[in-house]
Image: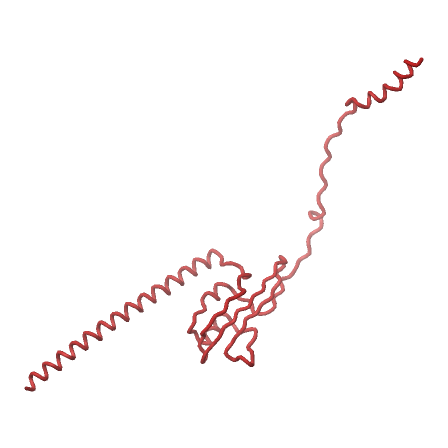
Length: 179
């Protein structure tokens, strides 16, 4: 009886070790909550002067206040104690959540731009491909204008030198004829 009892009680334990139960099929995964519930719209919040890198790159020392204002707009701050300094300050939060913060400081002397401080405009978006093409064209045109101006200056100096030589010869001939 002892052996029979041992066999009867050991059978359930041994059968539990065997894979006699059929395997259940994999259940489909449930969609995540972000797929079901839409994310709320977050509006862009702009505080201060909204500038574009493309227009900032067009600023040149020697421009007048009117030219600067036509190019990038009115400054955020005109300090009453520093009339010759314009500050363009921005602290924006686009809907994406990234923060854009920059300060552009322009210094003037007699209504002429003398200093451009672009510290902190690295947070501005980079130039788009189209803007890069336009920037390249603008730089090439400026270079061509500078080369043309240099050639014109050299040509003007050459002509002035030739005129001075011709005037000296004419004066010498006039003195010889007068004798």
